[in-house]
Image 1 (spheres, rainbow, N blue to C red):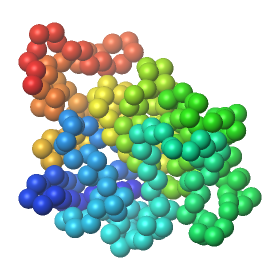
Image 2: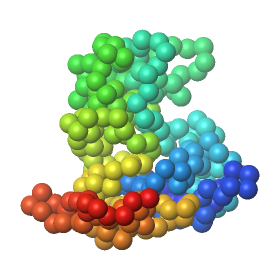
Image 3: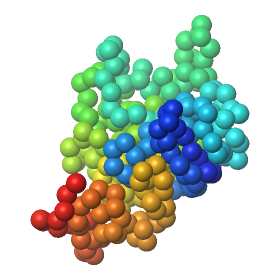
Length: 259
């Protein structure tokens, strides 16, 4: 399922955050959204999720205008995965994943066998079914992020929007989560994730969307668009991109300019 964003502009009052943003996220691909803080990544996601109204342009999800879809209809198509959060109540992992089926259950009903089966299937798909009865609060950061991904899969949406999924994770858990995200894209899902780590985008993404001052700096395959000039433009630092036996690496230039 493709997501097409065309001439999207949005302002908070007189503060224009997005200006004429156009791109397509394709089914079966991982699109990474890069850019410095405050560049409009979160606002872009909120527009795509129907959480902000009054934008100019259009967002088509599977060919349908997102602005004309109800929240329930949009939830059938796109699942949102936030950064790791800590709920007030001590939910079991299975209960957290069951929350992904909430759109299929009315306000006075409890999850039934169908919803339980969906939750277990999502846990198995991620490979964490052994954590079903564990406390979410007692999991490692990487395990918590995988549970949130399983919750999104239980929603049965065809596209995933991820807000910095590796934020605050150690190196090992970053790789574990990124490999799972890559596998989900390879399975046919449309995956869009925001990231502060261009190295992750370089290694795992099919395409990169880089934002600068609310506009698109580049959009395209990482090996075509991610270069030293882009890093300087986005982050104000000098780097060297080197080809190694393990792939392309972004290497900082010591003593280079800073903001």
